[in-house]
Image (cartoon, rainbow, N blue to C red; front, side, top):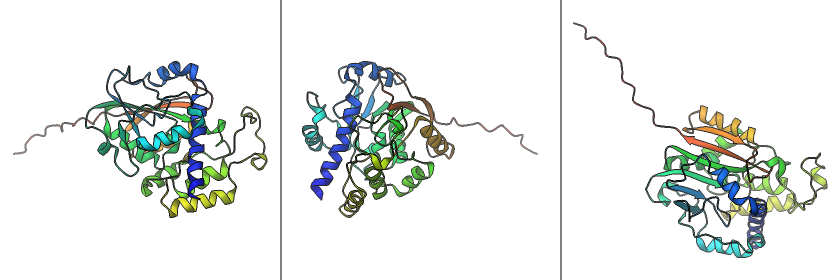
Length: 296
């Protein structure tokens, strides 16, 4: 079972990397678009660059952060067929599951953070965003490239809800939950290139799947029992659903930022992804109380 679990995680990574790197000729244009609202002349973070970073160390003063250590990343890299001919940049800091980001990186000013095709893998998206905002300077920008699930292998899944995001924030999972594992493995399909996302989709039962419902349940049980980190798509989004959910989160006071975007078509991108920014608010200025006359 453990060998199967490792294979499952690597297949997920392979699929994501293939989709992300399929337009390598447009890489520079895509990178410029994603970073357009970031202060790239200042210090920044990139989360999960893998072998397709948005930033360029030869140009940007950037710290590369991943949840895996160098050895695990190298193993995934060697076993990923989409990595042939690519280079894996060194990781500067490991953001280990369950450890605060502020404890994993140097205590210096950061003015932006970028994460491309990472957000959907995060078990606690609200907690993850809170930790990124905590290490950014006021008015610092988070740039997220997120899959639009309607044009991916997750197209049969329902968008993630406000209740789910808030519930995960309370539970604070450090690895994908059994429900998240089940959601991805039992409701996604194997994309062999024959599905036309611009046409009416065939019934889910007619599509080829990587895993049966029984497989999905077995993997969810194993992940819980062995405390195994199975890399899956924990959440699914559209541009509108992202704004709807996180506008409510912000209105409730759980994120101190503003949403900029989303942009569902940007230079260098494909229709299966969108770009959205979160700008950290400035600290509230102390308000002076009006002077009151002293009564005699």
